[in-house]
Image (tube, rainbow, N blue to C red; front, top):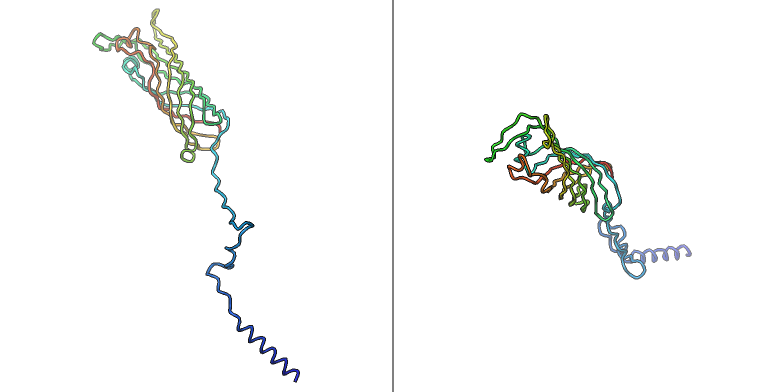
Length: 245
């Protein structure tokens, strides 16, 4: 009798358990449907972290560079008459100082040198060579102050600057008489702009264009007076290999 009562009780309990409704199934890919409803104290979701952006370099740095390029002289007729060309290659180097905040200071020098002949220019600007070898040398010292625009396109940055030019002009020749040779220094200004790509952590390459004006540099005598050219400046395209961070 006692066994019969236990069997009847177990059968009733099982029937009641089966009669309870099942919880709704979780959507595909969601193991815990209530997890999205979890909130920290105050009922707000935790704020998403903003992605980190790389900081542009903003530190004091001193960098050295070597330079090679080509220069087109404003007094192109004078240089063409004496050396055979109004342009020529230039070589040089210098130091560039980066100042925190974006400014920079550049101190550099370059040199142009070419062999030619002394000439006589007639009133109709016809050139007659005199058969006397001559060498023309131009050596500008440039002090530039400007502004940098770092990280424009990844590793590429840009710059623009303006500064003072102290230009040394020398002309020497064989069989020179008194006053035939020249050795003078003149002052002027220049503007420069370019872009740099970082090739390595310690190496960069700058492509730069510059315009230089050195008025009243010459033109008092000789070919430059005949052609009416007195500006020793010109336009340059330069490549600078930079060493330093």
